[in-house]
Amino acid sequence: MIIIKRFFIYFSAVLLVAACSSKNKNIEPWLEHAILASEEQLLLAAEAFADSAKNPRTYEHGAVELVTYNDWTSGFFPGSLWYMYELTGNDKLKEAAERATGFIEKAQYRTNTHDLGFIIYCSFGNGYRITGNEHYRDVMEQGALSLMKRYNSRIGLIKSWDPHVGPWQFPVIIDNMMNLEFLYEVGKLTGNQGMMNAAVSHADKTLANHFRPDNSCVHVVEYDSITGEVISRETHQGYKHESSWARGQAWALYGYTMMYRLTRKQAYLEQAQKVADFILQHPRLPEDKVPYWDFDAPGIPDEPRDASAAAIIASALLELNGYVSEDKFYSNEAIVILKNLSSEKYLAKPGENGLFILKHSTGNWPKNSEIDAPLSYADYYYVEALTRIIRMNRTE
Ligand code: GLY
Image (tube, rainbow, N blue to C red):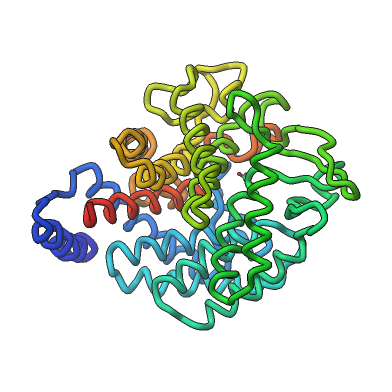
């Protein structure tokens, strides 16, 4: 009840702002319900896992998997807490966000992963943006310096994986686009032009080599570590090398939309729109617009969905809409996705679903891992998208 009361006090303020801007918009019931349920679930999870010094990743076979700073997903739970704190002003969320962010501080020294954007920017990045805590800024700077160790200036790309993942010389995965915001923003913040240039170079090379003629993307491009030539185009988490892994398309859409925001390079905006069109016009995108885990999965319509891809796509479309302006096509599509994710089918009741917000994601189908399961990154991009809608309503 306290949470609900606080929520309504907050939204009274939002409504007041909206009324003053002469638009007089109301928060729609589905959005109100989505925010309330997410807040309650995040608070329950924060309390349940407070003593573990780890953050939740997924819920499988009746158990929650908790992870340390060594896992690529460890920044999403603190990031969700920061977003929800920003949305509601609930101090319990702030305390929880500070605690969960602190759990993964050691990630700043990791040089064996490209995932430092996911780990550090979602957690420390949001924390810094919201609180201005200078310690968070220092962690981000060290993290970005560590990430730069994976940048090969001769090839012009950040290496995604080390040999333990697969047999590649210099693999680059489409997911790696998501670490560029971290690198570029820390470069801007600390006056490190090399970081900003590396981010742009990585985006340019990925644009040149990851996309097919139909604007879908492959998961992994392997480069020759001496010459920088493309050796192969493969998948690791998709159905097959030629297929369109749903979350990979989502990372591409989000990545190029975000890189357009940072650089205003027209080619990035055009690529983001091409990917959006590939996704939204795909004949095998289900009616509720929550993709199957791979657009070419052989058993469609009896294949698992990937709510994480849907949440990433929705959040990206909300941003993309702001750059194309003539109509609200992309934001309307995003809202359809989010309304569906907020229905009983996908949105868990607080206290259920291992204390994760969304149901029905797919983590790694080829490994038979996290299939039809909750995932902390589905929750993160869903909550981010909710904050983007609220912001849009306040400023439109
Ligand atoms: N490696 C990030 C993902 O599974 O999408």
